[in-house]
Amino acid sequence: MKIALIGFGTVGQGFVEVLALKQQFLQNKYDLNLNLVSIADIKYGSILDPAGIVPVKVLNHFRKHGNLFDFPTQIRPEDSFRAIKQSGADIIIEATPTNLKTAQPAIDHIRLAFELGKNVVTCNKGPVALFYPELKALAQKKQLAFKFESTVMSGSPIINTALYSLKGCEFKKIRGIMNGTTNFILTQMEAGQHYAEVLTEAQRLGYAETDPSGDVDGWDTLAKVVILANVVFGGQIKMADVKRKGITGLSLEDIQNGLKKGFRWKLIGEISLTENGLSAKVEPQMVPLDHPLAMVMGTSNAISFTTDLLGEVTITGAGAGRKETAFGVLNDIINIAQSKA
Image (tube, rainbow, N blue to C red; front, side, top):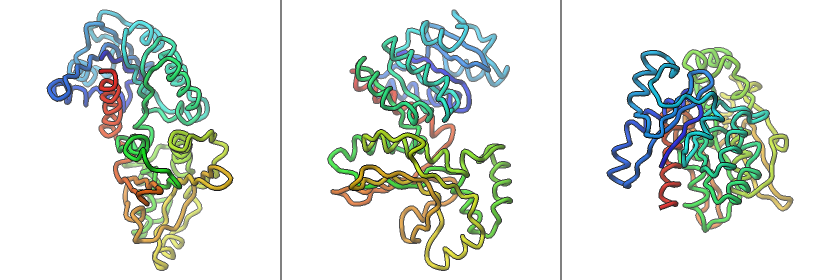
């Protein structure tokens, strides 16, 4: 399988690291040869070699020079769109930064890949949250794979569990902790720190951005709620349809009062199947201390599926991370390769 990687930021670099680590393992266990033929990044440069790019050589060069501009290669595409067209890849990995307003440039990358008959794996929430019905239809029309496991809870198997492992179940509700930054902040507030000082600490540790609104105001969780609503429930929900409230209004007193009553505050994303259709929201909720979601602390995430046959099934794991997200991408690629065998 020939692979072209669009985006060489944290996740893109993480994927090449994982590929370097697992390439021989995949060959030995699955008889699967993953051949990286192109990397394209607007900041770091673009390279293409039909014979294959050695992951370790790319990583060593990047660590030494901080870019790919003078990496020895047969072809140097002018931009990401040229890389998709010229790569000859079977699978395009879309790993550019998330844009929850327009999904650009990722949405155009994916549309072009489908137009050219290429399978797509993405870790980018933007296209899936904003354009899933369209992209699903395009992939089906062309009989191509469209995979995006790592858009929700990174490499933790949320989407694959819902679509494959729980196939015989009907879903009544999905609710969970879907953002590690806010869960870290609430955990530290429970230990006695005020919101403002915990946010500063989260930014220092790299858990929160300089502008933390995407996390603390609930936008990141909202995007994941939309993805789960449309993918798992088959909904047509848009970002504007989801009620959203972040954690900025929670005080240290709120946290402590909740504990006294036997509850723990968590930022919860929730989708429910009601008589009137799907209902979705993001809001801080008091979760009983004996519930699995209440036991998830720090930067960890968890999602509970309420089903008709198995009751409540909860998956806990990392909600973000370079290696974890890269694993989610790799897992999607393996599934594509095996389905094509």
